[in-house]
Each structure stands twice: as C-alpha cells, then as structure tokens.
Image (tube, rainbow, N blue to C red; front, side):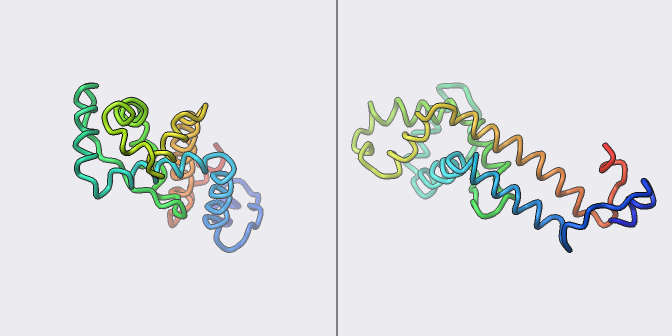
Length: 165
C-alpha cells in the first residue's frame, strides 16, 4: 500500500505495523468499550431473550403487527467481533419502538412473572437509561464507517484517491 501512496502523492504512510487493519480493529473495539459497551450488551441481551423462546417471539410479533412494523428477527451480535455490530445494532433500531412497548409496557401488564428474571431486568435497565438509543445509533453509524474503511483497506490494491479524500 505504501508504494501506491508514494506513486500517487510522493509521500510515505506512517508505518503502524505489518497489519493496519488489526490495529484499526483493536482501536475500534477500545472505543466501543468506552462508548458503546452498554449498547452492545443490550443488543446481545435482546437477541438471547427471544432466541429459543417461540412464545416470547410470537408475543413480540403481535406488537410489531399492532404498530404496523415489519417482522424483522433480531441479529446475533458477538461482542468480540466488529463484523456483527452494524447489522445487529441496525436491527435493534428498526425494532426499537416495539422493543420499548414489549419490555416497558407489555411485560409489566401482561407477563408480570417475567419481571423478576435477570434477563428482563437487564434489558429494562438498559432501555430506561437516558441516551441508550443514541448509544445504539452511535454504534450503528460508527461501525458502518469502520466497516467501509476496513473494507477498502482489505482490497489487494489500495486506492490513492480514497486516502487523499
């Protein structure tokens, strides 16, 4: 890649090690741990709350239908992998209104036996946290930028125009 930049710009890139992508990836993960860890945990908790629980999913789909929202399954996020965070955070945002309705309205009124479960408490606590939706949106937008950037870095030949912009 350095040779491409020298050819285009007649300057060298700063040597940040043998694999730029791993360093950038680790930097992104460190950033997520500072701002986004709670949102990441919420994404995982919501996925597992419904995964393997057909009755819960059926109740949730009824809420989606009442709100006239498309039925979109949650996407599994693996916190140690940045590859899953964009799609899983995007899906949580797409379902956000129904998620709030289900956990903050439906369960307390219709399924009070679930109020004492750890999984419900964890999700409810996250949902009532001020700015949680903003944190999930931050994860979604920053992971999209990150994915686009690393995708370009992974190409066999770097595009000098990309690095100049």
